Amino acid sequence: MRKLLIAIAVAFSLQSGAHAGLAEGASAYNAKNYALALKEIAPLAQAGNADAQHLLGLMYYMGRGVKRDYKQAFEWHRKAALQGKADAEYVIAAMYYQGNAVPQDHRQAVYWFRKAAEQGHAQAQHALGLMYKYHQAGVPQDYVLAYMLWNLSAAGGNMNAVEQRAALSKQMTQEQIEEGQALSSAWKPGTPLPTASRTGASG
Image (cartoon, rainbow, N blue to C red; front, side, top):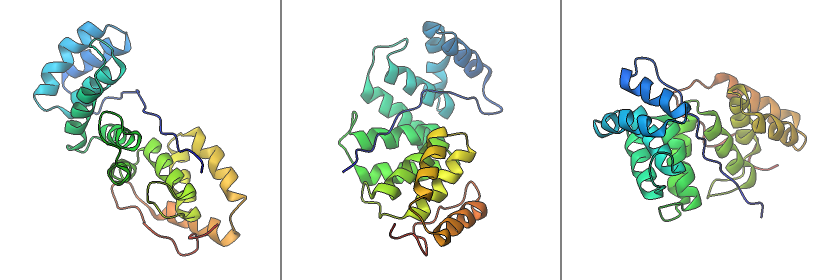
């Protein structure tokens, strides 16, 4: 069986209207001034700012400005994920999938990957597509849904999805490709992703 590898992204982007301290903390983080980043970010995270919680979680995950602590990384990301922060939902999903700091739980991994993917998170869409392609983590094999998800992920800039979509298309019928294209064209961020397709249950 192919091993599904899920990478945790460490990129951080600010949402519009972010607190000034958050912008300063993110700038310090990007400049590798982790002590200043921690000083700016930690109070905001403790006050409930989801962006700050996500960044603080990354600092614990990477051991930047703080001692590496995966349990703290998980807890801060979970706080942000529960507020709907897609990047944090993706990290939580990857940690559940790998059993990193928490017991391995593929059901929870799929749940959080799907939540992030439904917000348009390209890496989460890519990961969910892998599960549909390879029948992993209790997800049924469905080439059409894998193709759809990789279509969306590719549009979001994920180059792995571009390559895997091209390889998958060689194993699909024209009808399956057309359904995958139609599903990805019809889907809008913030709406549920389909859980089954008409033609893609088998390759």
